[in-house]
Length: 290
Image 1 (cartoon, rainbow, N blue to C red):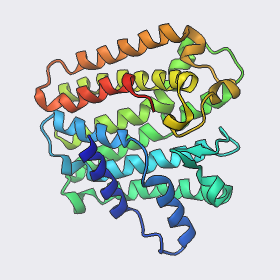
Image 2 (tube, rainbow, N blue to C red):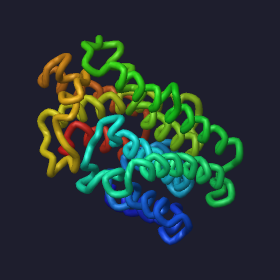
Image 3 (cartoon, rainbow, N blue to C red):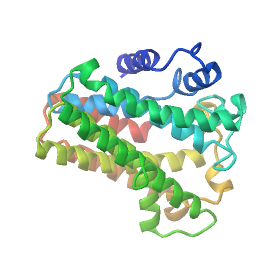
Image 4 (cartoon, rainbow, N blue to C red):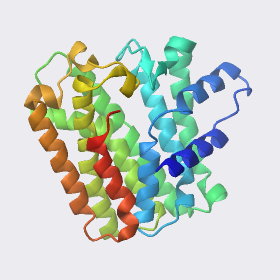
């Protein structure tokens, strides 16, 4: 995993415009929030899904960069005063604290746009067939858009200081967080040449993985340490957000997360040893402390 994380960092460094490119402050800001931090989990999932279906990691390079840029943009906007109003991200000041709110908004806009530009370059840079490229573009657009990540964020904001039911909480988590994981996994599988049955199993894995991740995130917001997480803890309670621990309690939430990981492994039951990285990532989710 560490080797692949270094590879993702290198891909991002090469893909993002140099900091000295005009307008310098924008490109410096883009690099500040995208490089040098984070688990690179979405990129790793794309690579792991590609390997699981017998593909070559190199074909996922464009998608890996695009996923991390979309994720970085979402964090920049999520940290803004009009959203979660956070001062710390990945152990350093949030983007708007360094560059101001206007540049932070524009940095997110630029990263989202550049992500899709990088996907469009996949045929030329990595030899990805045009038909596969179009399918991968659609996966990321769905995962990041109004019926994916952005839609989940809207319902999350609308539900603050409300006692949301299980269905609404599941909607928020499966869209705000899970949709981008699904785009990463399905996109990686498509780039690896997955057949319909493999794609369906990877999709099952993605849905359980996304929920396990977010339940664990909810738990860490209550039990984690700022130094380990690299961001403030207890913000969900301050903002009046409904979470799995608030709805079910910590013990039940931990049990639900473990069940989701079990479902991840069951989804990969028919996959060969090449899927071991996916299996390891699923187990890592509930063991992490950041």
